[in-house]
View 1 (tube, rainbow, N blue to C red):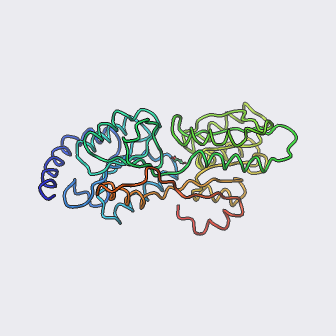
View 2: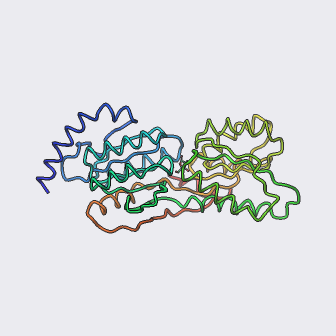
View 3: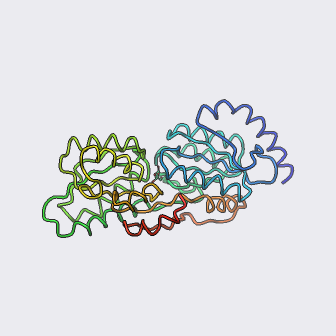
Amino acid sequence: MRTRRTARTVIAVVATVLLAGSATACGNSDTGAGGDSGGGDKVVLGFSQVGAESGWRTANTTSIKEAAAAAGIELKFDDAQQKQENQIKAIRNFIQQKVDVIAFSPVVESGWDTVLKEAKDAGIPVILTDRSVDSADKSLYKTFLGSDFVKEGRLAGEWLVEQTKGASGPVNIVELQGTTGSAPANDRKEGFAKAIAANPNLKIVASQSGDFKRADGKQVMEQFLKANPDIDVLFAHNDDMGLGALEAITAAGKTPGKDILIITIDAVKDGMQALADGRFNFIAECSPLLGPQLMDLAKKVHAGEEVPVRIETEETTFTQEQAKAALPDRKY
Ligand code: AHR
């Protein structure tokens, strides 16, 4: 053990020097807890984060950094700035640095097989967190820790079906999708569409990506409002896009939560405040607090222990009244 660590330290130092430039070029990297470049007896975890596109993502990053520090794990953190090529470069850097475990939240679902095979060939276990990949070869990663995004979309759709029961005329829905090609955008769209499918009066009249960002949500909602004078419902794939859309709706002279029903996903504090204030109508929760479970899994896979191939995050939903009650204790 000691010999392997010493050899790895030498390799890691050389690799760190050689890779310093490319690591910066592919995103923002930092070492979290301790930052001892692979030395000592700590488990070294290379983590590639999607970016900083939303309140959810910020809370997720905080959870991971705090949990690593608490668990005594050395975290090599890379921010991919929402670019898949940056994540692939970061994973290759982690492989060259011979980290003990690699974890990442994939920006998009497809295109991971080659780099995952490189990690497997190097003997480094991979954990998927928050988002999954569509690789057919499930041996390329040890486990996937995260939400059931199809279920979140379904819960959003089921709430709408319940609310619009007995509506005689058409109910015009606009949809703000998350990042194109990402698992949460694909799955939430699918879950919502299936939930409303048996109700022909519920019609999605426009659906476009707002990239999970507040500014994009506002801009796309402005376009929706111009093209569709009679919007009854907005389904936004996250709180941030819904919050951006609020500005566009208000600027168009409409009252959010009344003239247009707003359903979102996440339940971050700002979203919960909008729900409690009556500007949103329903939120399906997606928890970003994955750090402690991730650190536990990293230690287990490093020790060669078996872990479940799928670990689903526990989540709930919120109405306006439930948001009022939950807000004072909301952690993110
Ligand atoms: O992958 C989780 C999603 O990514 C969150 O719902 C969204 O807010 C984030 O950007």
